[in-house]
Length: 208
Image (cartoon, rainbow, N blue to C red; front, side, top):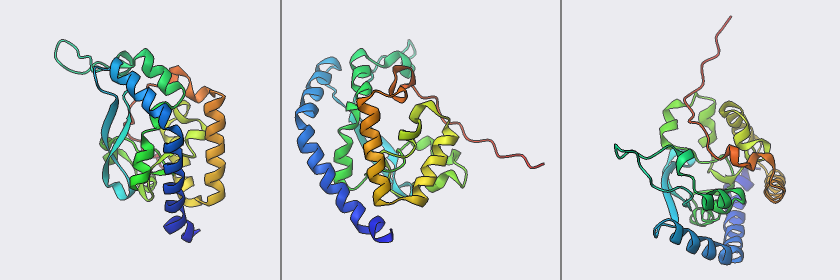
C-alpha cells in the first residue's frame, strides 16, 4: 500500500486525468462557452483551497453562481446566486471537470477528501485534521456515502477512514460508485443539497 500511495496513485491519477480531460474536452468546451455567455464572460471559478499538508492551491471549477450583491455591495447568499444553468451543471457534476487540470498538475487526486474552504482550517479538531495527510480528491469515500446529505462530522469520519484505508481496489470501487450515483442522479446530487451550510466546528465530547 505504501508503494501505491507514494508512486502508483500519482501515476494513475495523471494518466486517468489526462485521458479523461481529452475525452471530455468537447463537454468542457461547450459548457465553458455556455457559462461564458451566461456569466458575462466568466466561465470559471477559482478559489484558494488547502491541499496535502494544508498547502494552499487554486482550485478551478465551472462558475455556477452569479456575482449579484446586496445594497451594501456584499455578495448575496449562495442560494440566491446559484443560476439555472449552474443547477444543471451541478446536477450532472459538470462543474468538477476542470479539476482534472488540478489533478494533472499534481495538486489534487482523483480520489480523496474534498478540498474545503481555508477558513475551516482552525475549526478542525485533531482527528479531522488527518484529512489533510493526503491530497484532496475530485470525489471520495464521503461523496459516495452521502455527500451533502450527511453531517460534517460524518463526512470527516469517512475522510479519515479513507486516509487510513486507502488502496487501489478501494479507489476503483469509489470511481464506479461515483459514476453510478451521477448517472442515476442519486439523492445526494439533488438540487436541495447544492447549498451546504458552513462548517462551524465540532463541539468537544463532554466527559462523564
